[in-house]
Image (cartoon, rainbow, N blue to C red; front, side):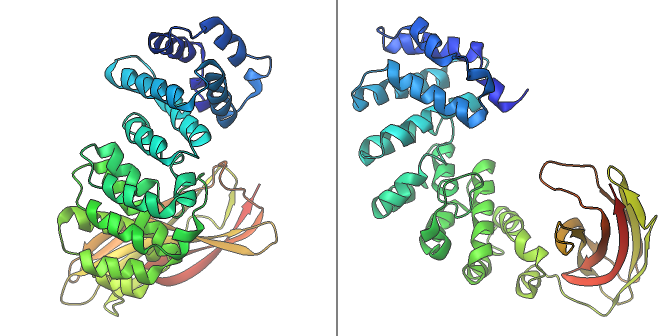
Length: 366
């Protein structure tokens, strides 16, 4: 089922019935007539969401304070009920606040705090961060200590400098120092979704301000098992870049005792939809165990004929003294929506603790 199809008859029936509880003047028939226009079937996900938001607005009280009160009551009802819905449909509620409360920060933040306990307001909060930065920073810091995990997660996710599919926050890309104060409140959070947001936020920061990220990493590495797991996940971009300082912090160093050999491709010619099989050996010739991070890089041919390097993790392991292992792996060239393949020469290499080893060429045919 496509995400856009969550906006269906079942959802609108439930939404209309609940809305009528809190606003008896609500006309289900008129609402349905406005929602299900002749164009509705053609709408994609965001179009359906926004269309639903605007339709709701037209059938709720004109005074924003009154309509937002009803939105909050609807959200409370959905939270307490056991209705069978996917949850993504609820994005209309933060969208409503983003559209119609931008000039009333107090009304907006009170509503966002309630709604985000049902569905994340990570997208809706960003226009307020831009328009009311200093006031929102006070609010976000307060939310980072909120008893509900959804609100705590919002304090991190909503201010991520590079949140996918979201409005850009240029100020925080350049100046992430305030974000650090939030992440320090959350790094040992008991909730997994909050900790995951912290890791993703730190990873965003590492892309634009690696020195600030590394300072944070040095401060918190070794604080707890939970924080170490977060920090490792947060370091993934700098791991892939082979950042020697980050690798060193995690005990991953270049050692002349690690011998790389027998790098082979099953075939140097493959077709789109096939798998590129490869293998290699590594041996620890030293007298102590070595921590290893194993990766491979594909140099994808792009439209211009040049190549674009993409790094993929294989595993992390401890190689004991005098231990030798053979690693077998494949890369799937099955067509995907996020990458377009181009026919011609590609390359593959193996990376051990950030150091790129031998490169081999192969040809892809579409």
